[in-house]
Length: 191
Image (cartoon, rainbow, N blue to C red; front, top):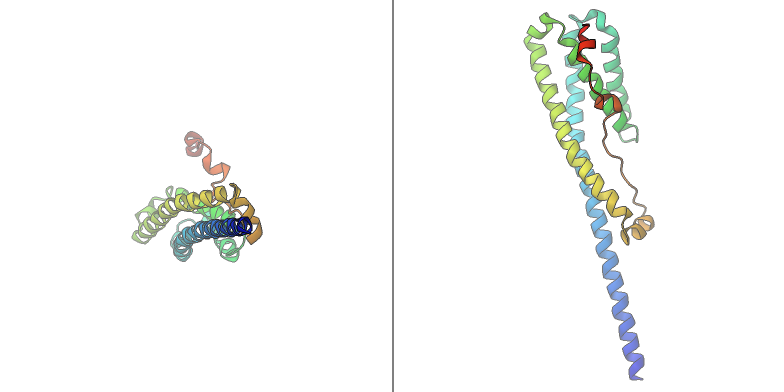
């Protein structure tokens, strides 16, 4: 009878140990999931600020860049697409395209001396440039949190638990190939 009690006690201790380990794994996965959510929220605040500033920038450059109408319309369209895609899987690509459009708009504006002399434009350019820098900085934190989340989800024994509770890997906030390519400055200057 003593060996039955020892066996039952061993099974009970093993069961409690497995339950404690499962709870610990689950809590760790929840923590990294929320770190990803928090870092995305930090980016989202800046993206909303950028969305608020862009109409002001576009209005400021309209008078000076009348023959760049296509570019202005494209940036406006990209802003609209990014706002509409909020909360969907299309949000990251839309925001990346908008960043590229804003960079192009600011680069083209450099060719307009009267525009560059406008205090309103200079102020808006500084604010948007500062927002873009902050977005890039926070994107690093977001990608680090996503990496930790995704690695944990693939590691054993976490991978067993993630499938049971329905956690999914998160996408990285990546730049497009065009943003990584070298810029041919001579070709852009027409030399």
